[in-house]
Image 1 (cartoon, rainbow, N blue to C red):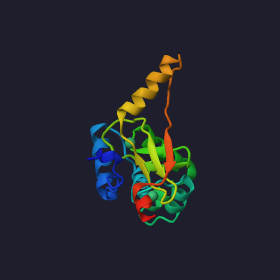
Image 2: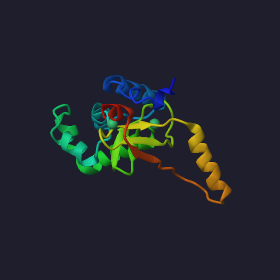
Image 3: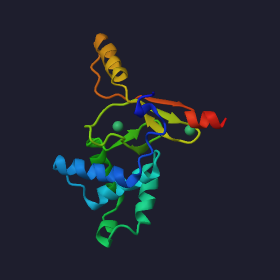
Image 4: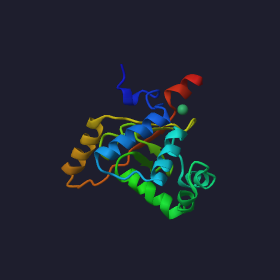
Length: 166
Ligand SMILES: [Zn+2]
Ligand SMILES: [Zn+2]
């Protein structure tokens, strides 16, 4: 059986239960999930695959779910600060190669480095949750006297579902 996180079907958590899990994690860690942070998180979760910052901004501008104060506060810097908060606390990941954000499937773990498998056909992104890959890369870098501070591993290709669809 594949590890759940390498199974492409694993990441279709429904958005509400993902947002619930993040709300719980925020309470436990005494973090403030403000309305704008919660809204940005929900939009990313509902998307179900990587979403670009300007698409998020568009959706928030058109948003009926926010009251007037929050919508007024939804200027780009506010949205970028909300993204920074969500990134710093490990609730979302940023995919550098496609410049987009995706929900982390493990909102209860702290911020982590994780390789991603990105499908170039359906644009889904799945975490390849294998600590050995991350640890080994770190180890090899250190053996060369290199001090790694961040890992961005993004593998592009065709996902199992798209490969099957031909
Ligand atoms: Zn993650
Ligand atoms: Zn695909």
